[in-house]
Amino acid sequence: MLKNIFKKGITFILEWEARLVLKKYKPSIIAITGSVGKTSTKDAIYEVIRSKYHARKSEKSYNNELGVPLTILNLETGWNSPLIWIKNCFKGLLLIILKNHYPAWLVLEVGVDRPGDMKRITRWLSPSIVVITRFAEIPPHVEFFDNPEHLYDEKWHLSNSLKKGGTLIVNNDDKILLSYTEKHREIKTLSYGLSSGASLHATDLHITYASGHIPKGITFKAINNKNEVPINLSGTIGYGHVYAVLAALLVGNELDINLVAGAEALSTMEPTPGRMKLLLGINESVIIDDSYNASPDALSLALDSLYDLEITGKKIVVLGDMLELGKFAHEAHTQVGELLSKQISALVLVGPRARFIVEEKKGGLRDSQIVFCENAEEAGEYLKKKIKAGDAILVKGSQRVRLEKTIKEILQNPDDAQYLVRQDKEWKNR
Image (tube, rainbow, N blue to C red):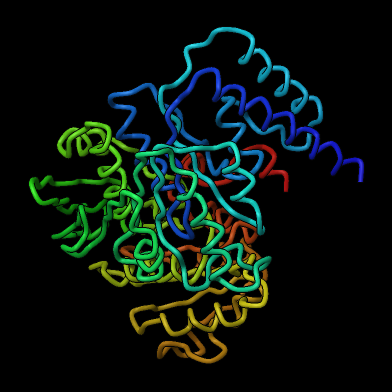
């Protein structure tokens, strides 16, 4: 009870300070929401606009009622330390009182956990640009909503907070999202996607390889009605990153950063941890680290990328529970079973809900190819005995399953653990 009161008090103070900071420094805001790809999109947008402007982005996934004010105030989370939270409040006050060299642009990820979350934030947050990445059929965080449509409505509310003359940028390949834009044609809207009907679209997507057919990145072309620019991303694969880059280039174009300059800024971008990041595994294998979180739509994109690989070894998939789905959990997991392919040599399932994945459909996989593990560490021990040269291992599950622990067990270089998600001291102690 006392802890909740303290949290509410801290949240109120930090939000109040954030509102005053916005009023004092008047930065322009780019806000990103959606069900899939928010963080990768945020990171790509930041890389583009910081090439020309003084900018700041949400760190990690600071996207809730505490995370957004923390980004605006340039503060770290205090975790469970009351002293750090009190210090944060004091630092926020100093930012209001004293003069500072404040960013001209803020790139904010804005998430939704419960009904009313977006409406509370948009009471005081007014972006110049809103990017909506995708509305998943069964989206994460749907457990506290009556149905997915109510969650879509909540996220869409961010577009209603646009400043006069602001721009909405959406994924043209998402039919659900497009149905919302059709109802709100009064908003200036740009789109991105894989089809030529988008304002900016991608074509000629290829995976690049190092020696031994080890994937090392992706290349594609970004095209609008006037220009075409080649994109080369290292250390990652997946359509999710293609979408993120396209969104970033559109944002940059709105801020007078042309496609060529935007592409140059993105060429040196470090892939976001836990989002289709490529890491070297034991026995000359490659790990596709998508361990940050999971939903059926995001998993579909990840599996498509795995199936596209041309490698000499086996394709192994490690899937953990997909959480925060409430009454839709069983349906969501059984849907994943329909995505499985005979290309998969071994399927490792972690957690009780993950068993639902093969309850109905197994994609032609034999029972001998499916392994059930109680936790991430057990999955890691199994993989140590299974992985051979040339293998590709896709790892994906919800945050609480902690599949970064599985990856840590099979890294070729233990020092690469620094590139995994949830490596803070507080997470490691959990």
